[in-house]
Length: 138
Image (cartoon, rainbow, N blue to C red; front, side):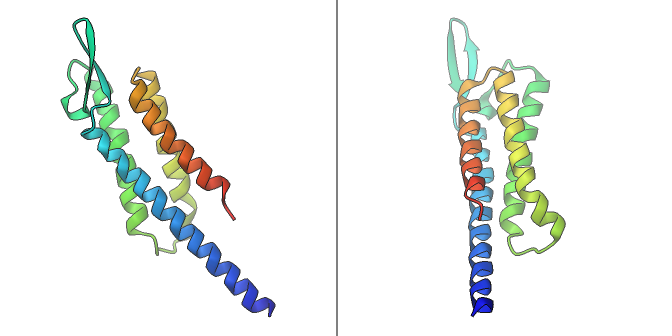
């Protein structure tokens, strides 16, 4: 009986991890929306307009490169998480969640440091969702 119970527990744990990977991958892929959704503030004379990252102008090149890099890395991590859900390498299993969390934390820091409050808030909410999923870890 205990063998059957432990198998059920392992199956439930695998299902939970599979669902967590699915949610983390989808959240990371959703960061790609920042290319198109007008959340970035751009000074336009006396007013600040909200524009998408692709429409952002008059921002120093190194800041735009940082934005593009962190967004592309996060989306790539999400795609890898979704594509490699059944990959059983110990290194991948241990690092995928940590990598996703680190990229999201770096995103929040970059957007706060560059005075982009709406984008920072968006990524911070995604970070909170990920943290809540990790707290529910079996």
